[in-house]
Image (tube, rainbow, N blue to C red; front, side, top):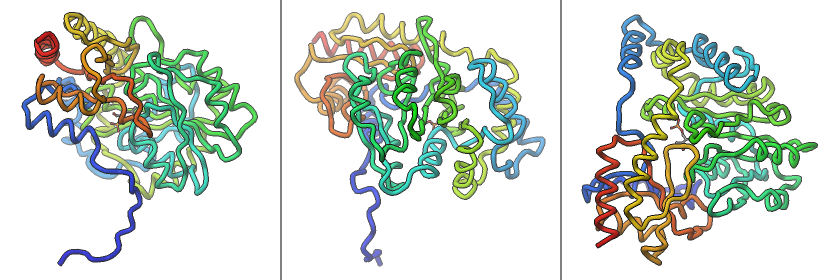
Length: 386
Ligand SMILES: Cc1ncc(COP(=O)(O)O)c(C=O)c1O
C-alpha cells in the first residue's frame, strides 16, 4: 500500500534539475553532451594505482573524523605555497564528500531560522536549497551581463542586520568569470565591522586562463578570519565521481562545522584520501590550467565558423555562447531544440537565476576530448549555417 500520510515538503520549489533533464535528453537523442560539468577523459593512471595500493595495504576502515592526517598535511603545505596562508592541520582543515558536502555542512552549521544569505546570480544550484533547509532565506544580487562580475553598490543595498553570510564563487560556474583582488577588497570593505561570514566556493581554483591568477579568500587578510573556503578534488583530478573535497576555515568556525560533519558523514572515503596524499606530494599535479586552456581555445577556434558569439571565459571548464544572432527563443526552449535538432546538449543559464533572466546565452562544458569537442562544433556549424 502506498504511503498515505501528509508528506511535509521541505523544498517545494525543487523539481528535476536541468542537468538531469538535459543529460537524459542527450542520451535519448544521441546528442554530443556538453551540458553537465564533468570530464570525458580519464584520471591519471598513477593515481588509480595509488588508490589500488591504498586498498591493498588495508586502508579500508573509517578515516579519522576530520580526514586522514597525511592528506591534511599536504593540503596545509599547498595552501601555504599557493596562497601564503597558514592554517592549522588539526583544527582548520576538514576532508569532505566533495565540494557539495563542504557547502552543505558549512550552511547547516552556521545558518539559523531568519538568517539571510546573499548569493550572486547566476549561482551554482545547490546553494539556495540548503539555505532554505537550514531555515534561512537566500537574497539575490544579479551579476552583470556580459562580464558577470558583481555590482558592489547593488550588493551594499541588500546587506542588513539579518545578513549572516555571503556566498562567493570564483572562478565562476556557469560564466567563467574570475574575481580580481579588487573584488575581494570591495567585499572586505563592505563587510568590515559586521559579523557576516563568507563561503568562498573555489572548486575551480586551478583552472584559470590567460595569465589570470586565482585569488583565494584564504590569502585575504581581512576576509580569511570570517571565511570558509570550499575545494574539490573531483574538479582538479578529473574524478568528479569520487566526490571528495575539503574545507578550510579558522578554528572557531571549523569547530562548528565539525559538529555537523561528524553526525552528517562522520568521515569520508579512506583509501582515496591516502592515495590523494601520495599523489599530491608532486606539486605538478595541480598544473591543469594549460590543458584546459588548450581545450577552450580548440573549441573556440572551431566555433568561430558559427553564429554563436563567445563571452570570454577566464576560468573553469565552461564557456558561454550568445545565441541572439540565431534565435529569439528563451534559453530553455532553445537548448532543448539544439539538443534535438543539432544534436548538441548544453545548459541554458537562466536556470541559475532565482527568477530566470534571459541573457540568451548557453553554457558549454569543454572538459571533453578533442574528438567530442570537434564533433559538437561540427554539428553546431552545419545546423547554425543551414
Ligand atoms: C561552483 C561549484 N561548486 C561546487 C561544486 C560541487 O563540487 P563536488 O563535485 O566536489 O561536490 C560544483 C560542481 O559542479 C561547482 O560547479
